[in-house]
Length: 387
Image (cartoon, rainbow, N blue to C red; front, top):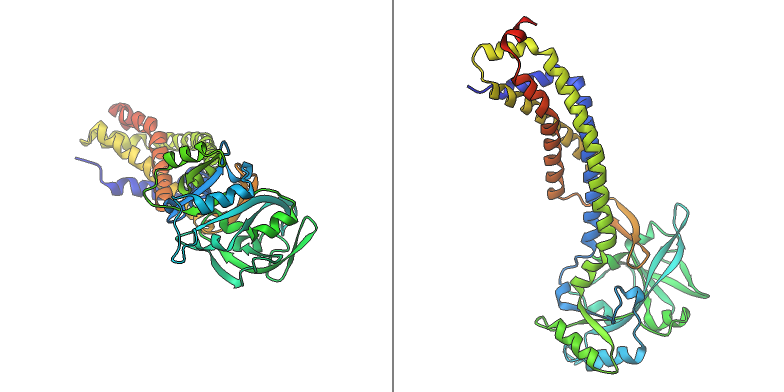
């Protein structure tokens, strides 16, 4: 016969204070893992825009990001006007745009400087994405004027980014005429007319060309064709693949950090759980002897104490989730290692992350309780009853 689950639950309730302190050790481990993975998830979600399979990015051959790419103006116009893979609208205009990208030191609201991402765009840039950017305040810039629109996250993070403010690029003032929202990494940038930005910043070349292409395009063959054209030494990449490559640096760092901290804190939590369960076994030696004497098998006693330890782990896991849950959706910022610019993203606590964290806490409870449960199950019946 198996020991009822209520037996372990009642024992936990009798030792509420001790159980709570032990569970808190596991809770902090769970909270750290859950928090870092939520940050990583929020960062990666920025680089997973819907419909990116239909959008292509042209870069200089060998460039890993638009920050270290350069496309001469004449080459960009050849790509836009002559490349057969680029789709056209009903009027026959190519669905493509040349853009520039650079970083500008700007002051944060709470002090300090960050590299804010600036992007020069063309009017066609707004029409290329299946899920286009949305204007929240003001208007889009006039394409021949010194005007910019600002991504919503930057309004509360950086100075001079509110509607009606003025940004100075080099020595040229640009008026902030709008605030936009975009469901990808470009949602925390400053946009302005590409030609005006190039002139203000004395930049001779674009950084990339972005275009809508045929869904069945063979990108490898298209790149070979570009390489064979002496006028065009560029590569073409599916935007989804390009964006995925941009997450590698920070995403990997956050993953390694979560693993490192989980190992360190998890080891401490296991030791704490083990000490608690050893004390529990020592204080209930007589009770263990009686259980064995009245017919419960050693494996049943082992499982009962192991379940008790696992329940402590689950309690810690739930506390850890409650500690992290209020941070869901809160925006923060970090450096994008590929472009060396500040990027805004939010904590995104997903069901998968929550389940992973709870399973980890359950596992920590099992590991911490295994040795004490084995000691309890292998007590001598006679010696245990005598105590």
